[in-house]
Image 1 (cartoon, one colour):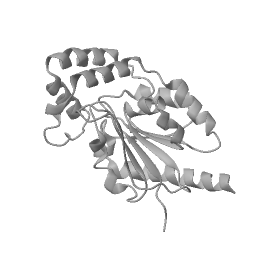
Image 2 (cartoon, one colour):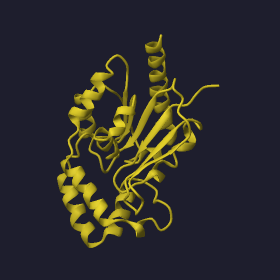
Image 3 (cartoon, helix red, strand yellow):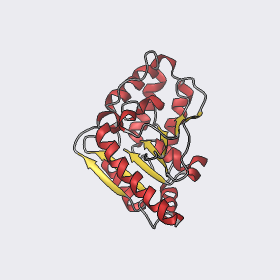
Image 4 (tube, one colour):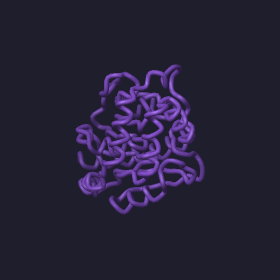
Amino acid sequence: MSCAPTIIFVPGWGEGPWAFDLLLPYLPAKGRRLFVEHGFFGEEPGVIESGARHPAQPTIAITHSMGLPWLLRSPLLSEVDGIFAIAGFCRFGRRRLLDSMRRRFKREPEGTLRDFWKNSDLPEGPQGLAERLIPERLLLALEWLDTWDERSSLARFAEARRDHDSIYSVAANDDRIVDPGFTREMQMTAVMNHTTLARGGHALMATQPANCAELFAGLSAGLATAMRGEAV
């Protein structure tokens, strides 16, 4: 019986663990799972954990959008063998978009959030979720997006694992949130494998779950092989 990797799920702005719901059926059913909770909707920020870790299998973070720089700043990074970044970036260079979102969010937070979900091609979360949003927490995360620059963190992560592939990024040509230039900057920062899909928008884990899972499986298999080689 094959063993599943440990997976850490890190959602982006305006999201919670539910953002990965449509991807989960395509991933290995067993194994340790950690879901990062940012606390955007009243939950306590932290990590929700389930399942048991298999020591012979890698720990891989699946990040979405802002989830990548969040992970690169987090103590959780020390547990990670590989990163699967969906619509990821090290720094978010769209300051005009952030300024516009901040101004509108202060006037109509729920409408701003719902429009963001729509533009991200992300299904809305559980019923009543938008009504429970915490404005201060979401505004703080917009400041994170405006100020974080984790290029050096990503470069160090890749360099420490230069003997094997440890980073895979996937993006879509029709993403209305993350500019393709962000992905090119990531590729210039660190060695990684990358796939650009023709369609799928920003939330590829929801719109292209089968493709994401297939690409993730390749990264996971490569990391497991590298771990076996190191153990010999």
